[in-house]
Image (cartoon, rainbow, N blue to C red; front, side):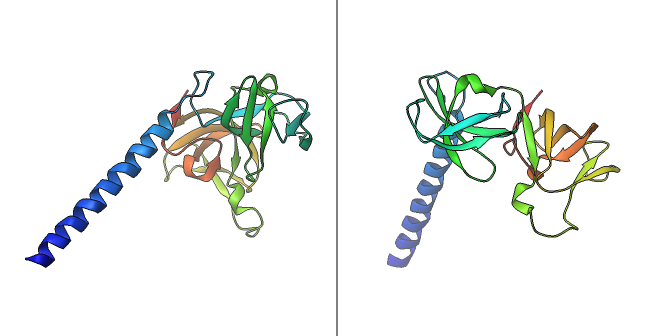
Length: 179
């Protein structure tokens, strides 16, 4: 009997922990910054030259200079008119909000860069795994994102439009849908 009580307590404790983790995830997904917009969220760099600073002010040192307009970044924190961002490589810092755009872009499987010449992200004619492949994107290729269904994203890369699996890009969250 003592063993059954211990098992019941252990199962109850695991259930409570799983509920707490689920609640934390839901709160994180529903979090809003001072701007009223969700945190985290993806945006793009509006300018060809964007300073990444170590703090939320022009008085802070520049730690990195981005030279690619339209590059996707993830806003992870807000302070006044400054946004703490993270790029696909994990680099974090502060950018003035005026240098960010709500347009969406993505990077093809940046985590697969350097894994070999035979590694690609397939762009398909339709949003189905069995649809015809119309392009093979190398990891690291940037694309503009028109919409995502939660599983697939309609993208344009180098003038070609098609669908890529949402799980194979950095620039849209798993399950995120938007037009």
